[in-house]
Length: 244
Length: 244
Image (cartoon, each protein chain N blue to C red):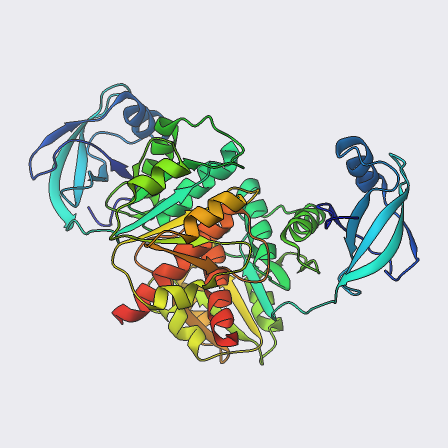
């Protein structure tokens, strides 16, 4: 193969040289019908455990394509230990948030219902599919875990004390996020409130936690998915800076 | 009025105490039919020049509502001198980019066509409407200007030499964005390439400019609208930090 294949797919199967992997119906349809890939065509597979592998189509079948795993192109790496807890939004904006959080390396997504949360209904299987597609396209080697929706009380009660909880406080009591993150924390979790903001009771509860800190994202009111994307991008930029 | 009205609208009219402002048909419909606001109801108006004003509905009419301007609630402030040049994307993602750029304070948006740009067709009037709505909801006091689409060559030829051009280079030659921005520049412009990336010729042209610098946004491949949102959020976070 002269160049790296542009098609990357996430699979559950173990990946090792010589292994045969059968794609599910959806991926087979995508590869054969949509992308029109013939037998012998190259692609990349990853499973979140074994790195990324150069593969080729052994048998193109629109329902059950079989792939031969050839050689490893990238070693498995770990995403930063960052969680994102968020109050579900309207469908499009929730999908967007999942996509952006995946692109920006979030390891675990936690949908939380708050007093002002708009949409309670949430299909985590659909969110998972959105995360897989974003991981495939962002060259990520893993897919973020997506927790079942839970109440904010529940999420805070179960929160690991060793993990810093940074909540974006629109009432402006927090320090600029970059200042909060400058302290440095390996295990981190962001909490983004609903469009309506946290309730007073929720803010009081958040302030009283030993592992929480309020952060501010600037002078304008950001939509929830903007705040999530901004917070994750700022964290990553600081991490990149410290790495160099 | 006991509390600040939640409805904010952008108008072109001059705003001063006692002035009467007639809303256009679309805003009148929104206020009267959608939000069901009666005569005497409060709202906020801004025009990008005179700050934000507390107003009330003098005559509710679904086609031509008249507003009385009462008192100024916020002085006009200037957004940071940041431009965003971007290659138009699919409709939803372009709308999203406009919305996020507005929330994050961009002063001027420049759609640029590149060799790998997907969609050439672009209705700047629709982008302007998207920017107005985002400004209204983000409590911004101005609406970003939106330039007519132009070729990258044209945009670079017309670029003011005193304005630093930071282009996000997916080939990874750039320093982390936070490091690039640490130098500090009052007048700044970001350039985000298309999903397909810049062509080799375009990258060569960008590298040869006296006012350009390449920046990197981390280990994963970000979608264009993610890169734009991330870059703007990182710039703002650094500015917020320096202000404190």
